[in-house]
Length: 295
Length: 97
Image (cartoon, rainbow over all chains, first blue to last red; front, side):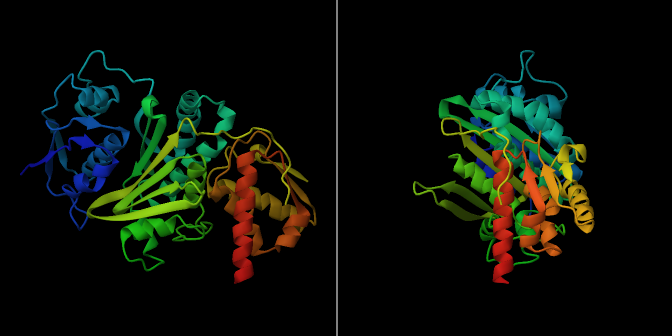
């Protein structure tokens, strides 16, 4: 049997659960042993959509599901974008167009093992972020730490120790999106080991509170996600976390309070997707002065 | 005793990096030495690193002892914030217990 999956017209973070819900069953098994992804309907895809698509394909590959692709209109904007991000080179063996190239506004989706993450951050992510945010490398310590917190979460809570990472600059929106996804156990599954929570949205929201931890490592103290949310929202950004049946959007209101909006969906996102949205026009880099710490 | 973290760990990233630094601090404390940890050349630290390197000291020492015997030098903005935020939370948790 082959199950046909029609990609959504606008494939963005909003589609995560509906899209994956057609592929991942409630018992977290694939819907079929052959899935054909049909691109005929695709009118727009952003970096988050691409990450969701690739993370799902990798999840299927891991379960020996055959994946095929059809009806991609060469030359359309979303297909050109996917081609420039290396999607077809990766999954079909060659780009669709001879002119396919990585755009300056993209750090294309890469599968990164935890042990490789520091090198990727130093050599690939930091120079690109420095250019996009128009700040020196030394001003990026806080943002680098936020990305490391997500990688540490992947290493601590995912059995895979591998994440799909994509970065996209949207100059017309003064926005950078850093999307990191793994297909591990998922935050709600980890949280439910130690806490009783009503639903997956509330479980993710709880996990962003300081001191909330599943104690998957003796020195885990529930500070990583809290640090991520505080630092990104302090810079005028948003954090969107999607895991299993839940999603939480974190941002700061005009009074400076961090707001967390939990949502619940019928579909299951296998693993965790963290999307960091930075506003390039509001971003304030770290001062780089080294001083002694005062207790 | 001065411990320059970059002499002992490549990055201040995972909990194993923090464990390596904490072992050095604990050895110095056992010799009744005060310690200065230098973060010279370190751009950022994670919460896992700070938890393992510094917060875990609270398991065996009071905050007063740590404050009197441990100095922290050459810290950038992110490192100072991470250390102070982590200690503030853990100390308030201990006080409430």
